[in-house]
Length: 128
Image (cartoon, rainbow, N blue to C red; front, side):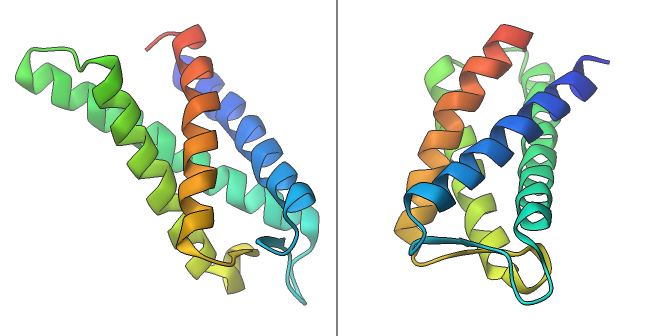
């Protein structure tokens, strides 16, 4: 049940961050195509990012159980930063299907950093 709540919260947060990125930097983050509306692009991007994060949570839990040690906060932060950055970059490469495009890999790094910072607060609040 808690994973469903995390998925929903992450989806909303990811959608807001993607939308705000487009509002603040419209030349760097493009949402929508000729066939995909702005709202659909936000929802699809947010859902993919939330799924990647939930899968990351599950994999990290299994890793911790296998190693019998809990990862440090900095280790988790680096892993989620890399996960978010790669996810944003891949989503942008799939712009024809997802509807989100970025102008450079540096934009993926910036959005990945913002996603990681805000998501970490939510994940800590919901317990992990």
